[in-house]
Image (cartoon, rainbow, N blue to C red; front, side, top):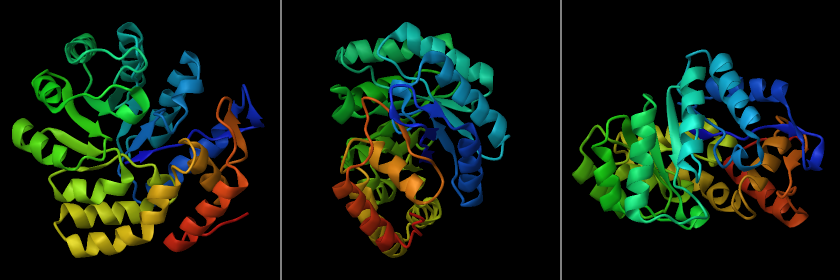
Length: 293
């Protein structure tokens, strides 16, 4: 599942315009390349710099243009429970298949606060909801025991676990049962996560190598650890170097280098530095990804 970038144009500015034509073409590219689901307006989609109207419009157009060919998962998390409910309701109204809700950031809620936050959103909006734990960005780690409690709440169907701690997959699978969706949010450890009982990955690398990521996941889900490792070896530099600067800076440059987006990103994010560009070029070459610039 790709955590898709939001293509923009106009350079590095406070209000770089969303490039709707490029976005539509990018969705077609992912569907053709075997991406299994589109995750729109997550961190990689620059949700932090889109206003609420833009956020909802990206979701609406994603659903419209994908047209049911693959599931659309909308990023609707917020550090305000009221805002998270509003965004989740908007995603439901737009026809999204599910929502992905990051743990509230900056205000550092307690584990009980996390439980009550997610429970409130799930009770307010009748759409499948996926928890998203990424403490490296939010300064808030949702503990396994809290996830287990939330797994019993109707509408909460799974978690994107981005700590890179593979043993969590084993613990969550044993405690939450076979129907609770476990997806990695860490490309570098996604293969091990799937082999340990996970169901897939919401991937940044898939922006650059969707077919290869799909094939790696298929092999891992089939228990073919040898084939999965072979495929993952070619992707390993991308897994690392797409985070050489803050996500989505490297991913947006890589999509641009593939000829699929113009130069466009919103402050306070900046364009990838020359040193970063050199690293991404090498990683793309290792993965066999053609570069157009």
